[in-house]
Image (cartoon, rainbow, N blue to C red; front, side, top):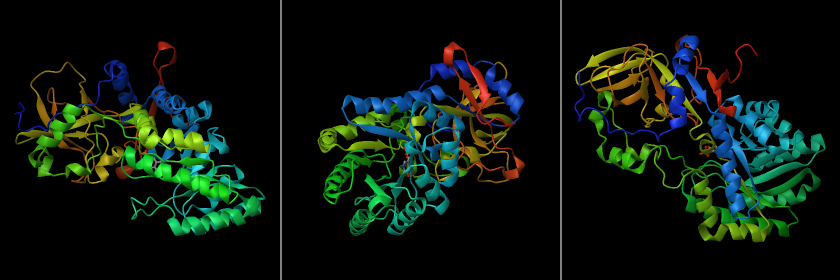
Amino acid sequence: MAVSETTAAPPLPAHPDPQLDAILTGPLPHELSYAIGGPFHLLLPDRFDANAAAFPAVLDEFGVEGRVYYAKKANKAAVWIEQCALSGTGVDVASAGELRDALGHGVRGENVVITGPAKAESLLRVAVLQDCLIAVDALDELERVIAQAQTAARAARVLLRRLPPAQPHSRFGLDEKELACALSRCAEAGEAVVMEGFSFHLSGYDTQARAELAGELVDLCLKARALGLRADRISIGGGFAVDYTAAEHWEHFLEEQRPDHYHAGKSFTASDFYPYHSPVAGPDALRAILTTNALAGRLREAGVMLLLEPGRALLDRAGCTVFRVQGVKDRPGYGVVTVNGSSLSLSEQWFNSEYLPDPVLLPAHEPQGEPYAACVGGATCLESDMVTWRKVRFPTRPAAGDLLVYPNTAGYQMDSNESPFHELPLPPKVVLDTAGGTTRWRFDRHPLA
Ligand SMILES: Cc1ncc(COP(=O)(O)O)c(C=O)c1O
């Protein structure tokens, strides 16, 4: 059944990645699929290293002192934190489990920032003992940090997290009055607290908003110093956009997409989609922030360090997800491909949205036939378990045994929601080590370890 141009959703290919394509079109993905017997994720640590190095390079360009903390929530793999431990990149954790994992892989406590609301006592205790930097989110939390520091007879390193004035409904951070109380409490706490500065995290990807709030935090540092506090750094959180696809594809997709491009006439609000094209992304977004309102100069003059907590941006092009086609059925005008996993391995599907970079078909045999439009469902009993709702235009009709690769999934897509639903095993993560010009693979966390 050929695809009429009106059946399939407008194409949205991920940016070309010749180095990864060379691996994907070789025998390795089919070999791994055979060995693993279920979906799996491929991880590319070299990409993570390059992304993590690109941010400090921008800070250096501007002569701004700073530090990068990888936001660990974006992907649970061990390899990223192993790389952080080796390179001295910091890690942002938000739970006792994440902190244990980071410390256990060799990240030094002083290189960890603790974020998240109303932190568990067990998290605060280890954070204080390990000299981690704690982004305090509430006044009662500050009291608990001080109590932990007094019990341990150590100084707790803290940042005070600012409720963004432009996002007053955020449930995170301290408002102006609370900040004033927190500052005097820090001053009064004496040796129990080293107040190192302030932090925020903004929803969205706006560089201007980040620069403006960063400027306000620099001023707050100067005020805090008048109280005898150290206040020599600010964290601007994460939210450095990732550019998944070219502008022309993105614009065309947004203009053209409509319910009959989706299985079951499903509709999505375009503004709910992640902005899969961003003209200013990753380290360029940092450059834009530093340039806005001459922020770089203000940081230098005030002697304030700039801390960053990128998650998604450090994982850009650092991984993909591979399913095997288990069955294909025809429906009027398109097909339904069922893969050997579920949409729990593509988190975007669980936010009333759709992961839009197109999956790529790796046929098991020489492809024959005409282009074919199909949506992609999981091997579960749920109507709503759609790995892809839209009817993707494949070069040929997929067949059982073919592989389907979802590109650029390392940032938040792979494992935020995975569960062994239906007794399906969790997809393992396979690390591709490409050092020395050869490609070798290993499991991220060895199944026998
Ligand atoms: C405090 C904090 N820092 C950093 C991040 C990472 O954001 P991103 O992955 O968009 O860079 C988040 C994400 O929710 C966050 O809440």
